[in-house]
Length: 461
Image (tube, rainbow, N blue to C red; front, side, top):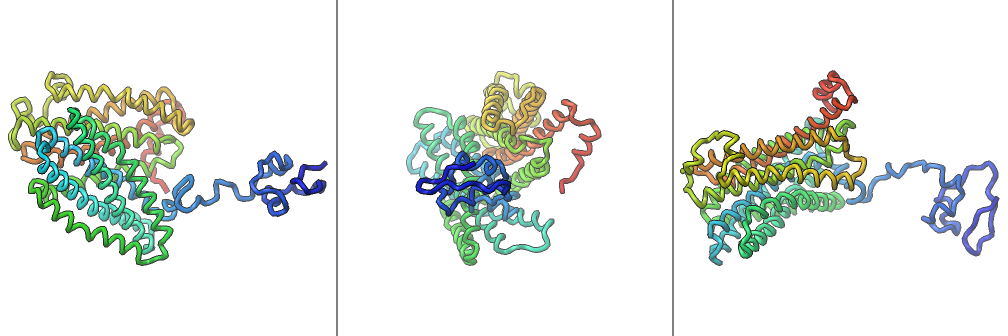
């Protein structure tokens, strides 16, 4: 039996009983490399390669997985705190700017420039410091399972974290400024659009910048002075941002007293990341990685909108330290929060009604894109929707309580409530989602109660 050869070559019979040549064996002897398998003998197409494609390392920087995340393991630990910055910094900035716009503080051109520049400067200081703290926390967690540190990877980690936080805060800050000013000109309430956009784009922008920056510095890790030089350069800009922030004394207060909510919210988000890291590799939690950003993002968006609206209401109709008559109780009846005729109760009901249709749309789109990567059993979908409603109900009630407490203490809810609530949203969303997978595993008969309990208390290797 003979097989076709490239043009200009005589046909050559295959040796009988010998092993079929692999595709690479024809390259360099007139056979074009990468030729489709229909030009090869059937035996050659069917013989598996000695090294499966899945075991090939991805190209530097890109591929099915970013190789830098495989080489620098602490980058995975760094992801939840950096992504959580969208709630700590960008959503807080959007809420502050929306309140300033709704109260008329940004109508004057000169005052608008002063508010924008000082707010942007404060966010850059916070992003730079928190980025460095997040890298140090990631290193401390990594040292538990490691005997010694690779200082090259430490430099890559710290520099990537600082630059990612800085650039993501700058990009989202400029975007928020444009949205708030545009919404004000068109007569749209910025509270309804600026905060959710900051939350939605925060994950995408932060993770994209982290992957690109860390891959670049890891490829150039042999240039030992590059990462320390860049990191120190970004840190050296901090005095400049502080000088700009001093032009606005109320904003300067945030720089003095606003660190505790940001750092505590970062710690709360890290517990959600811990749950995710414990469950993502287990077969019972298939789809956990895909659904976690959805349930956490939707809950964070809705509670940030409600918090920003209540804060704007208080800034317009009251003074710090004095609560309106209808908001005198610190721990209000939950029925009044969702069932009364007050304006904040109406907005809470509207946001709550958005939960089920919003999650159904996202779930359908995920099933279309991911296919078999997500379980689509009716029991799981029901449990997922119940968990989403529970998460949002708890967050909306806590938003009302926390705003009242902070306003009574003459603190700005825009700066002190949103970081806590988005951090709690991440923790609640991840916990409830993991519980949904476990209950679905139990109710569908794939495990008994003893296996479920052992799964809950098991420690991953």
